[in-house]
Length: 383
Image 1 (cartoon, rainbow, N blue to C red):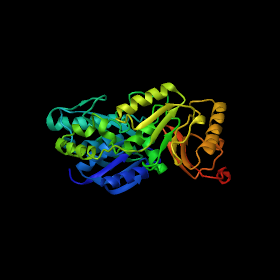
Image 2 (image 1 turned 45 degrees about the vertical axis):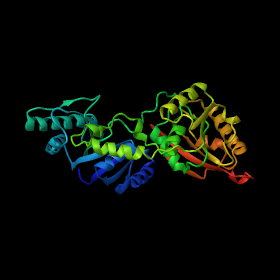
Image 3 (image 1 turned 90 degrees about the vertical axis):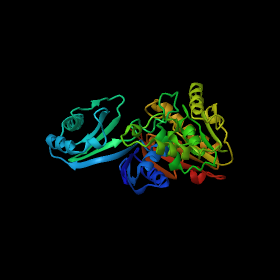
């Protein structure tokens, strides 16, 4: 594998954050797209990307791209790909189709067409065809069809990269780890600044902050990456990458805290933080936000309060009014970043946001809003 083009998938709104991460890793030709970032690199960079990127969902290696006008075109062009370079008859594979095209009435059907093309290709060249394994394949092949354009790629991650491997316990609505890391990066939080998540649930935001502060690569807890089953996997090179980045781990003096009104949630957060190797790095407590005191004279609050999918409207109105009042009266000199699903909730806070980003939490469209609680007079800060 020389220098080739890769595609890192991410969540909507995090494309530029991921692009910055890739540049820091040494990627070339970095180009943000919709929920993805294209970049150029070699095999070592592919390994680094999977092991180190905090805001990537997966890293794809394109193997073919072409236009089609029919099912027959898809089969023929897919069959023509030299699959023998990437898969042996002894290997298993699975297809992950993403289809938005009028050519096909059923989105799952193109995956079956490509599956047949690959199997026939191998059978005609080797006399055997590889087996399909949807649960634990050696090779996961991404089929992306938009209109008449087809892209076939190998998924080098297979298990999505947000599945870090440290989450033992989770609450009712856990935040995606990639989203949590992206929120922290968008907020501009500096690891030397105290950070508090006053509604931390099972601890995703403070844990991701702790990993960032300690320079822990997010892939360190994972036992599997898809590329380890590729024909050209270089174990020595991957061990070199792991050793390099594991060697950069430090013990930060950052002050990071998480609290929640639920004692059960805090129990879960403590277990997850310990699994992430952050025992003693993050302090957790059971507390109502209304009664919390700042960690220092200045700091960051980053949190994900409940919204419409979890509480009734009346409860939410009171909650967001309380959040605004607590921020105004208890957290002078702080910056607060809140992710929620609607402007009506932010209006209830009664503060003027200095910056807003559109994000998605799963399928829910959200707003990430940043606020500054100035020292002294607050009248200019009230919406």
